[in-house]
Length: 448
Ligand SMILES: [Zn+2]
Image (cartoon, rainbow, N blue to C red; front, side, top):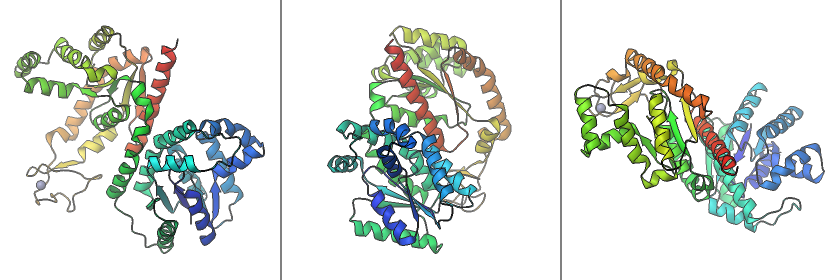
C-alpha cells in the first residue's frame, strides 16, 4: 500500500501522514523533514537545498527525485510508503509513478487536503517557526503560496483522473479528517473503493484553485504580446482561453474579428463580405486593418494573444508595423504542435447528432449506445469537416501556408515550440512555464 498526502501549506498533511504511517504500518517519506534535518546537520543535501528553502522555493525537481529514489531503494523491504507532501510538481509526480512501477509497486491512492489560500496563509503566519535558518516573513509565505498554486493544478488533475483520489476538507476537525482518511485507505485495501466522477473532482479542484487567484502576481505586472499558432485540431482554442485567463490578457482571434465585423456591418466588414461573397480570399490589408483596430483597444494595450494572424510573412511584417506605432513589439510566438496522425485520430473520431447537435467522440466521449445519440436516440453521423480526407487536406494546406511564417519567427528567435501531444494538464504546464520564461527575458531586456 502506497499513499500520497498532498495539499497546500498548513493543511495538516504531516499530522495525517504520521497517523496513517502508524496505523497501517507504512514508512513515512517527508522530503521537507529530510531537508530540514540536513540543513541543521550541514550535510551535502542541506547545503545544496538551503538557498531554495530560504527563498520559499521548492527544491529542484532533480534533487527531490534523487532523494526519493534513494529513500525507496534503501527501504525496499517496507510494506508500503506514505508520501508526506510529495509530489509537489508534475515532473515529480510522473517520476514517482514510474519509479514505483519499476519496483513492481503502485501508487494506490492520493489524499488531497483541501484548504483555501487565505486560511493556508493565516495558519502559516500563526505557526511558530522552529528553523532558525529559514526566516519566516510575510513575503516568503506569499512566495511559497504562489509557488504552490503555480504547480498544484497539474498534479491535482493528473491524480484526480488516474488514481483513487480523496478530497478532504482540511477545515474540519482532526477527528473527522482522520475518519475520512481511514475509511478511504481501508476501502483501498479491500479493493471496494468507488471514486467520485472526474467531473466532480475537477469542480472541487477548480474551486480550490479559484481561492489562489488573488495571489497570481506575475501576469498583471508583466504583460506579454504573444502569437499562438498550431494546426487545426491541435487544441489551440482551449489552450489560448486558458492562457488568456492565466495572463489576464485578451485572445484576439481573426475568426471572431471577421464574425464581429460582418455582423456589425462595419465598413471593414462590408468590404470583407464583398470578397467572400465572390468566393475570393480577403486581402491581407483588410485583415491587417481589423487586427490593427483591435490591437489599439485599451484592453490589448496590456498584452494580447493573437490567434489566426499572421498567416503569411507579409502579414507578419505588417504586424510589426502596427505594434511599432505604439512602441510595442512581440514577446513570443507559441507554436503548439501536434503530429498530423494524432489530429486525425482526434477529429475523425468525432460524431455528431443531426437532430440535437450534440457532439461525441468514439474514444474520449462515447455515447452510451454505439452510434446513437444519448438524448434522442438519433443515429450519429460524421460531419464533412471531420472526414479523414478533409482533415488531411486541411492539415497539408495549413503546414504549407504557415511554414514560412514559422521559419520567419524561428530566425528572429521568437518561436517557442510546445508539444501539444499530451494531456491538457501537461500541455498547460508547458505553456505556463514558457510564459514565465518569456516574462523573465522581457524583464531582463527592459533592464538593459
Ligand atoms: Zn441528439
